[in-house]
Length: 416
Image (cartoon, rainbow, N blue to C red):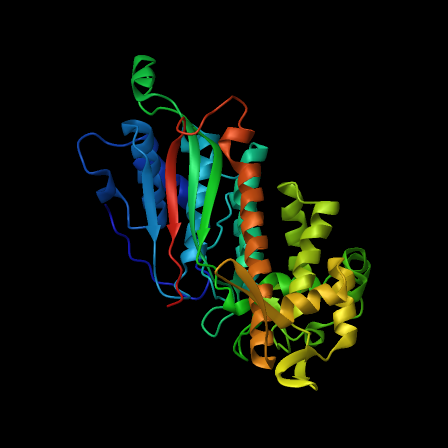
């Protein structure tokens, strides 16, 4: 397959991802492909070339397509995938670029990177995002494209190299209701129609260790900071133990001098996350339950352990107040929490033995529990997004698995 090498300029470049540029590649590589010359020779290398060719080959040849986006941390992979998705979703708005790809004012939108900073650059990015959503014509397209901020909130974190680094791998399948090429030919169409019917996402290798620890210059996952930055009335509705807290109130978060990611504060991103969750059906009691799971992770980190006075090889929980808060949050008795965290059960020859844990092992056990809760929560969120976006459940006509044409986008994580 074709390979395009892109370099992250770490700044916004005027017109690089404008609607005019998007339309130019769609026109030359999808709608008006010349018969006598190689269409690729008529355009410069660009990520829109990749998406346009994939869409064209899926429609004309009836073949599923895959696009691999790879590179080191901070290279721009996640932004590139979002740019690809925006164009692939936009094709359905028009059979030709002139019908839907140009805005009335014809202002240029601006290029993208993962780590550019400065208020001017962020205004350009937001303008690009507004322009790129102008083609949205159905709730399906909205849900497909708005799932990205959710995955970023729960799966991205600030690292030394990148303020919005994906700490997991993902494979997104865009599902298209594609017209049969033979039927299109009989109807006199040069390009069969293909409408975005839905999407599915598979995630893997979430960096669970980041839930419980991170480097001083880095942060844990964005959603923790967003939750702490939420208004107190919203925090109280989720769990009254959040009211009046800040980042340093929780051991797993701790101090950070970064409160703005890509031009938006944690409080602003909290609202964006809540709005995006509502689009996929997570609101009301569902939202409260989801965020209480996040609170449980945070509160587990506040437990402290000491040596048992009766046996130095055993341990006890020394933070009684934090334990009571956790018990109330989880809805279980404190003794049950102690049993779960201060001992382990060994099964041998059909017999079960209870083995007490020392201080180090008890802390490790608690950290493992917190990581597993977060991992399961992340997996649940991905399943919820898929339920809200997949063609089988949401398209306006019945579709079974295998009925759709696919364009897959594989975002290979940058952490080594």
